[in-house]
Length: 543
Image (tube, rainbow, N blue to C red; front, side, top):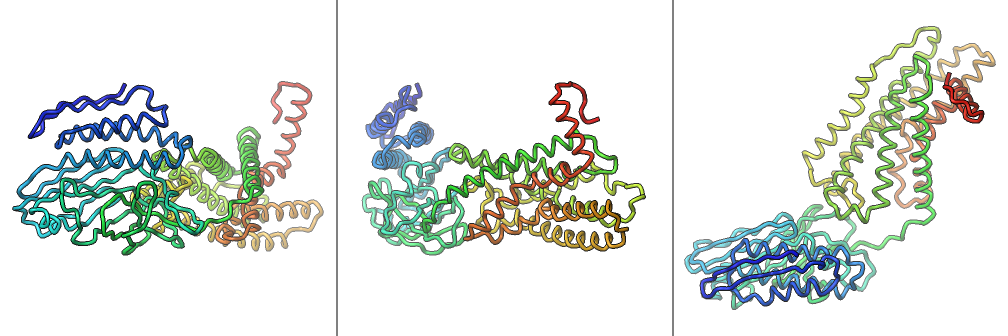
């Protein structure tokens, strides 16, 4: 049983406010919230303390949140009805914060689901205009002084911003003649003139909305207000807009929101989705096989697998996390903190993978450059520890700087980096630099390898080894991430999407093929292991 019981003594009368949320209401889709809101309607007190109002609002929005979570079982009409009643109850509660004043006064509160601001003016106010009323995601400019002149020099404005109201008053309740995708771009807000007789506006009211989702430049923005059961645009218009904020002008007060319409794109091909899922799973399998081979097999002392191991670790973790996130997106997306954390972790994992690809390119270039010195003893150019510092610290620095500069840049609709305000370049910028360097190094490797091989004796065994080396070098084109360049050109081309998907999901496959399966020593160890497994021996098989 969740309840609030508060004794209130207004200026004119005494009243006991007892709002009770009955046990089991969290599992009901109707009745519970209705009963709760009826109790609020029966409140007769004209003035209430701030703590009483916030306590009751907390109970109301906790109940409405439970209902919105189970909204799949509620009809659109029911959701609209719930939302309308919650709005009316909230506006009634905030009106009880208005008290007579001779000059000016204000009250504000912040809860998890709603923020509120109340500004009151009296006959002796010395302000030419009231300050802008701000909440986290919105603000309002209203000529309250002019309104007060038409109300015996007294007036008040109440401004509320609802964080979760869009779950009840959905963007799809905006009915248009064209078939478009509707996206709620702002929190739902309401502005009222409580305890004001003449509510006629002297000037249009301006609302500034901060975009809570990625802004699509090709989309169409509409300033809308709630009219019983739907969003409509009458009396509201967009004054100006950029990638992060939109200013709306309205000639009346009500409940408002900002909705973006985008053209409905054809749904992704089922075949493409299935191909993507299969490719990613196959890639994860080969990443795992490559890591097992690097960990369990015996390698020549001169072989440096540090970069390859960490490419596998980073991409295996990133692809697995991304796959799980997309599969359970409907459960993860409402948990904003979790969604932001996943986006930041994905940013780090993919960036570290690209840094390791660059390190691998540098090590491969050094190896090929010294290919002619076959008899010389190979030396490690850099220690494994130093390489690990480079591989992970650089990525961590980029992510930390990104968080510091644009903390709200993570947590898009797919729990990835938001594309508005150019924040996506915190990922694309480093990736472009690394891909350009890797492409240059790859061509230098091919040229150097070709020049070196011309100077070798053309014996049969050497020629066979040369062909393998050339194949491995070409395979490095994928290992070094060069096919990621295709990602900049896939828009609108399903063929390029498929090619991009196949190559970049199979980096683990190429690593396993080039460094494990085509390695004579490792291949012999595989044979020994399979022989041991088939014969049932429990001896070490990699000897």
